[in-house]
Structure formats: C-alpha cells, structure tokens
Amino acid sequence: MKIQAQEIRFDGEKSYKVVGFEKCCDSILNHDSVDLNKACCELLGKVGYSVKLVETTVDYDYYESDTDIDYLYSKIDYCPFCQEKIEVEIVDIVDLSDRYFSLKNNRKDLWEKHNKTDSIKKQSELKQQVRELDDKIDEFYNSDGFDKCISTVMEE
Image 1: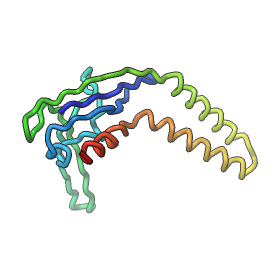
Image 2: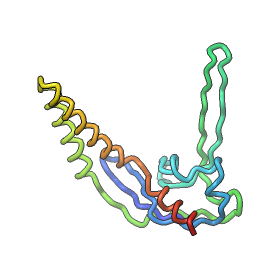
Image 3: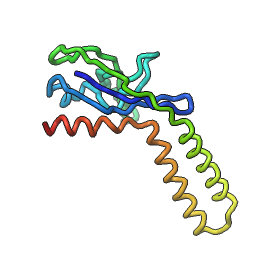
C-alpha cells in the first residue's frame, strides 16, 4: 500500500491531508480493525502520518449501567491481510500559519462585537459568523482528503 500525504503546519501543530492512495488489497479498506482515517494523523513522536491497527475494549459498570469504550491505536508497517509494506510519503509541506492566525483574530474580533452589542438580531448574526469561522478553523485539524481517495479507489 502506498499513501501520499500533504503535511499542513499551523500554530505549532501538524495536520495531514491524503492526496494519493494505492491499495494493496480490498480487505484493508473494509476491515474495522484497521483505521485509515480518524487516528492516522495522531503523532507518534516524529513518525507523523501512519496507518493504525485498532483494538477496542469495552468496560461495563454494572452498578451504574454505564459502558466505557476505549480504543488503542498501534502503528502498523505491513498490511495484516496481504503482508505488503505500507509506505507513507509526505509529498508536500504547507505552512498555513498566517491564514490560521487571521481566522483566529477575525473570530476574536467578531466575538468581542457580539459581547458589546445590545441588539439580539445583531448578536445572532455575529454568532452565526463566529460558527462559520469555527468550522473553517476546525478544518485545519481534519484529514478529510482520505475519504475522497478511498472512494476513487473503490470505484476502480
């Protein structure tokens, strides 16, 4: 399996967007114990982007009828189904710190205006603008490019 990712840097953080993907077998795409999307961007020291094997444990609390689900992620270097090496290549490093700080400052300014205004209608409009900026800021932390790559591979 070969994965090509773009490293995005902002505010001392790193995020990864998958820009290319070649599957080794269908099993790795369809199995629940292999996480190619959600936890891939978790940093393990200087490793960066990696494919994880997921182990799930469920703890039942019979006294309070509560259930805790814990997920343990372990980096894997070979496909557990066909034993092909998993190669991850960082093809590009992009620094988006300026854009990130611009969005954060705009959000701060809008929130200050929201707190100073007496108009309920204006507060509602400003709050909506803050939510839109929050969504844009949250996109820095997401690795949403992988779903697009998977869907094109599955269509082939």
